[in-house]
Length: 250
Image 1 (cartoon, one colour):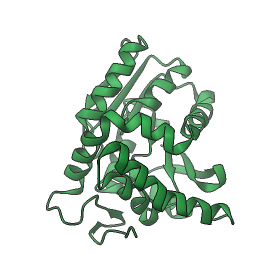
Image 2 (tube, rainbow, N blue to C red; image 1 turned 180 degrees about the vertical axis):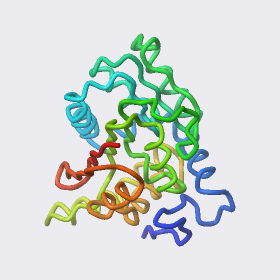
Image 3 (tube, rainbow, N blue to C red; image 1 turned 30 degrees about the vertical axis):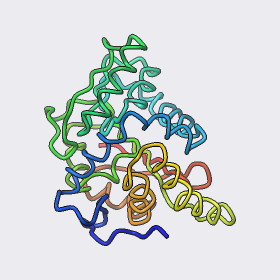
Image 4 (cartoon, helix red, strand yellow; image 1 turned 90 degrees about the horizontal axis):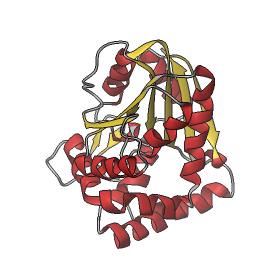
């Protein structure tokens, strides 16, 4: 049986409780290790529903017509590429994993989007950007991996323009019977097993359900957003609560 790791940092959890590395270092190493199989496993394990979730993010931002966008924890740049549908002037994607960024850059070049999307290695808790630089900031499945959640959110708030839009797409805990029981079994047992087979990682796809289990969600997350400077946070559950979309502004 998979168990929730004991070593935590605040409300977050580390991939390997036996490692002396910081959460940030562990997450970087973990994603570097699974980068080449990440997109394949994402589509396989999510039945491609993650594509629909990203489209919902696009639809939320569409009325605001953001011209300069930052995608934090961009990974292999799926959301950054999808954001091109909004016709912004520029999209910047940042991540701490060089391995994930390498795959993302290949996808951007294949789609001939290099003049619109720039990727760079950077830490979400120490963003290398000026104050009030972006019209919108997005984070898809990345806030769980922040070592210090509030510090990362405050940094995002700092680089947003006044009135700028902030969207978080993140996994949450299903509460609807019987979807809750079915998804718990799939997420807790099937996902780690398939992940280990294809990614050869013993931690990455066990860390995923464990990190979701302890991460703040719903009203609790909205309170944290307000505490870190964001206004009017709204949480919308998608796909029976498998994921949540948080929309707020500076």
